[in-house]
Image 1 (cartoon, protein in one colour):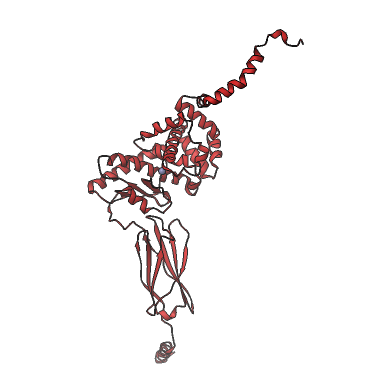
Image 2 (cartoon, rainbow, N blue to C red; image 1 turned 90 degrees about the horizontal axis):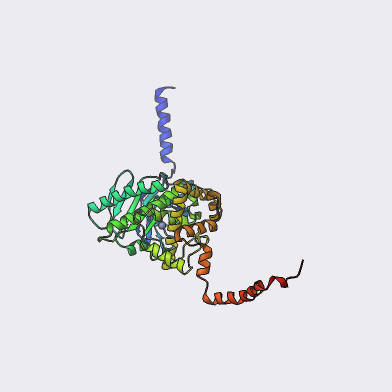
Length: 395
Ligand SMILES: [Zn+2]
């Protein structure tokens, strides 16, 4: 083909393309999400040209939760502002939320790339410090307090790994509140009012509340190992975490605390004396919600799990957790792993911990009236037994 002919053909093609009613490509810009913690999130975007869109959807996928689809409206400039009510559909505290847009046009559908934001409690400003293992964020206190948190977390991690030798996904995020009430307000509504610390093990997030004062270090050394242990437990059992007995998860977390709660022994002795110990079968799926029963449940679970740990060791405890990881029930897991029923194990624990047998305990707690009633029933029997033998019928 002659060169000038080729140029003419090219120009004709170009002119034809320029004159055709070609639709402009749809663009999504100014994407952002703003939130007020615990209240709402506003998702923002601008879609141009606006008249190319027939329908628009926002897809929201908070970490560890299912995806929500919300239908959107937009103005003539293509501006989208979508208010999302977090009181109605709570987001996981300190979790990452992914979101993207799906736009319907006459020629097809467009899905934008995924965007994300971390749902941080922005009622407060946080100071931060990190290393390979931890990201520490604290609310009040100076840099040396942050370093103390980081150091305590480091030694707590080593301590908890001696009990359950597992490697969690790093780095772990630690948020230190100054006030337990602020921490409780940061959690979804179902949290109990006596909660001081919290872990979202699947997110690798730990929240603790450490008021300033002389007990600060002690509280750190108590709360951090406890909450970090919940993350170890999750690393071991994964999705079965929610089906693992609560007496076991809380018991293991509590034996990891560097300073045992001094009130546990007193509460246990009192409950034992009154025969008011809780049955571990009733502590499989949840602890009582009222503070004093919950305290007893913690005290018992700590003592029971410490007994299991001292008797069967770290391997025994890990093997027991693994039974739940494969989906065993609360009682079956104990039987399969430790070769005893949960009631049998509970009796062993009582004997080892209180130096009193279940029979002794039953007699000790019989009411005086019941004793009298027993004597009344037993008296004729004693008379029968005391009869002279010669009155018996000869064989
Ligand atoms: Zn706990």
